[in-house]
Length: 210
Image 1 (cartoon, rainbow, N blue to C red):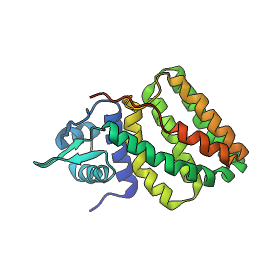
Image 2 (image 1 turned 90 degrees about the vertical axis):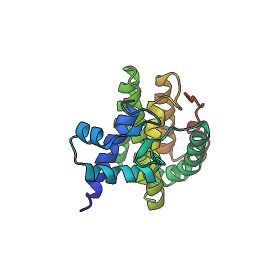
Image 3 (image 1 turned 30 degrees about the horizontal axis):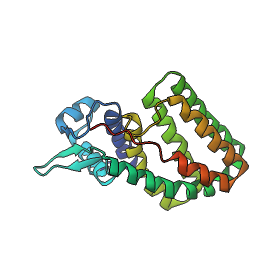
């Protein structure tokens, strides 16, 4: 019996958290028994979550069976940035009018406060999660189902890339002013400014650890 979408999503997030925290290393084989015991889940829903993560580019099949954590190359991270650079201007353009509603402005500011806390405490994983939450919120507000579906796969890869310092500014506090600038442009519905800023925002310098 397949697990529900909600349970499957929770399971994939928990596996990604293990990778993003470094508990599962890049290119390491994912051992079902060990992971199921660590997460306190049975192997059937774990396998389903792993298949989903394979389809989303987080895990990859081994020639002799089983799966490895995907090791992101410079080329793959550049491709990830290229897709974001194409996707996010559209999402932000479509999401901008939603910030005429007070509750959406409050929610966005709350995410930025999380980001500020994480930056002040130099918590790289927390700031990566807040960064992803910021952009996920915009994808949701875009109202574009295709964008949401594409983003659902990208966000997990981005969490890993950001958390493991594969592609992130050296100074974590630089992340906050960049997102404040995006917020201000969104609130003003400055679509030209948004497009110019977001393309530079999603193309950070590569920092690949071989």
